[in-house]
Amino acid sequence: MTTRARATVTVTWPEANARRLARQHLSGPAPGLSPAEAVGAMLGTHAQVLSAAELSVGLRGEDLRRTDVRTALWTDRSLVKTFGPRGTVHLLPAADLPLWTGALSAVPTGPNPFPKDARMTPEQVEEVVAAIGAALTGAELTVDELSEEVVARTGPWAGDLVMPGFQEMWPRWRQVLHLAGHRGALAYAPNRGRRAAYTNPGCAPLPGPEARAALVERYLYAYGPATPAHFARWLAAPKRWAEGLFTSLAGSGAIEEVAFEDAGPAWVVAGDTGFPTGPVRGVRLLPYFDAFTIASQPRERLFPGRASERALAGGQAGNYPVLLVDGTVAGVWHQRRAGKRITVTVEPLEPLRAGRLRALEHEVERVGAIMEGRAELTVGVVSVGPHA
Image (cartoon, rainbow, N blue to C red; front, side, top):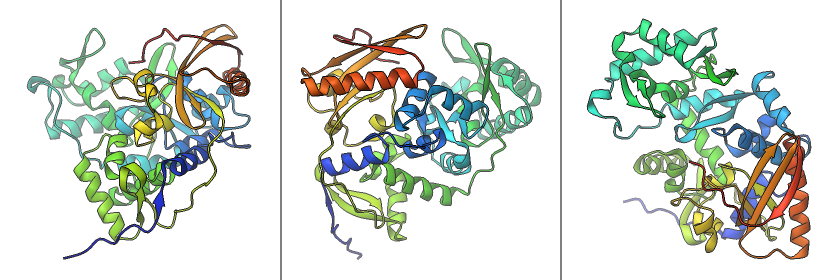
């Protein structure tokens, strides 16, 4: 019988939170930081709302603007827009795409969520992913153009309108669009007008075991200490699978157990046991689906008391832009743009003292600069509901 060694390091929530904020460049913006470096530090930037992704990236760098993010994405190609963790649209560093695709394509999938008559056989899934990759090689296609190519390369069954979409039915093959992204066969190209377009990024995924181990280590560096359950929740992966993965990495000496306050036993990268001792100070505005709010656990410590009621949606983080005061969620906010003018409404959960109000005004100015507009602050009730 093997006895697990006890953790020799104890980490408090304030220590863990301070280190996460520092490694996210949220303790203070980093000079000379590139968009790809900012996205890498976050471990991907949620990009379903691209303007929110631009702000997430810009907040990490001292002089980053939304134009810099667009240039990195569509001109320099140091960023890629594709399907990332949880099957949602993310910005990822192009240099890390082999790691991401190798890891994500090796995550076990859950039960098939589609009705029986809409499902595809494993053989059909492979056929469609191959058809997507071939059709997009050297091309940029809208979803309708890609649909025509997929059906032509596979068969009429792929085009059957059996998937519920936004007020319409989508063809059967669309259910594996995100899987093609995870396999490295598909990424976003620049929009064609208002229509999304796709291309083949030409990525060769890393072998699954190597990629999974690297992703765990990067996750723990950015968001540790963390448990397998935290990792599974962030990745939308089976908890038991994550437990097995952590056990394997612990056995190889890649990760190290620590005692993490309310969470109990948790893990960090082996040897990465240094944490700040001073308290977190400052005021920050984080946009929709910022990686820090989604990945930081335990969530009840980041969203204490009334913050869990006001700034979470059904327990989910990211659906509201949030106000951070001294490292914890202390309100929500919303921006409305008209030309260059950006009206920023901030709803603190508690009245802000004069010093924090001045810091908030400075943060609003930063938001305006990053988004290349003129931002004006209003302190009041945010009436806009959560983002779906």
